[in-house]
Image 1 (cartoon, rainbow, N blue to C red):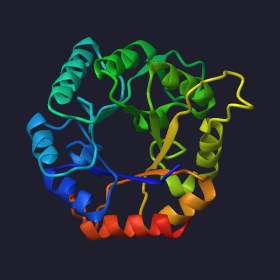
Image 2: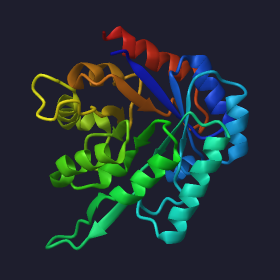
Image 3: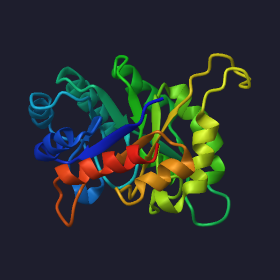
Image 4: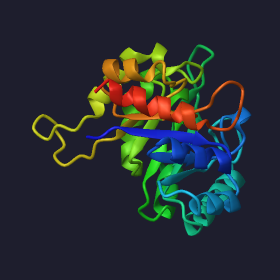
Length: 250
């Protein structure tokens, strides 16, 4: 399997820089400070007119969490359909629901199968990534969550391998386990023909650590903002450095 570098882009200029720097795919969103929200369709159209690599669009109406009420879910469906009609090559989203938690203070979050599956259907066959909402799910629920994500029809899951506040480089053991579990082995897997999920490593991925992440986790898909200094615009040089460091460790 080849290596893939996806760059999260919060504006048109970042997307153009990412493509020029050698990115394989763009995750298009807006509002860097909130971790990314749904972009405006006009930005998608502008980006598509200037780059030739695939552009996946984030579908996220607010930054509070990954639980959405009825109206917010309807907004997500409408936004996804609009982005689909505007030329998106794929989509990035994740919906969770909460159940009562017996003891402790952590939220007991699970994949909302029905709603995620509906959005995947609206995508009309275009690939969907379950984004870092996965990292909000307690690790004790991960096995169930991965099965649920697969059942919804997602092609990939974006994760740091740990809680949402952690960076991937601090969770390499967990990432290695996720990559190993999601690798498809038709001879050993009890469910013949089961499609494997791609694990996309994200969370603090930089040119200084992408090589060791590749070596230690055996992951082949990586996600970074490609930023340099305090700018919110992806740097051509930073993306080039990421790509060079990734392929150096083959």
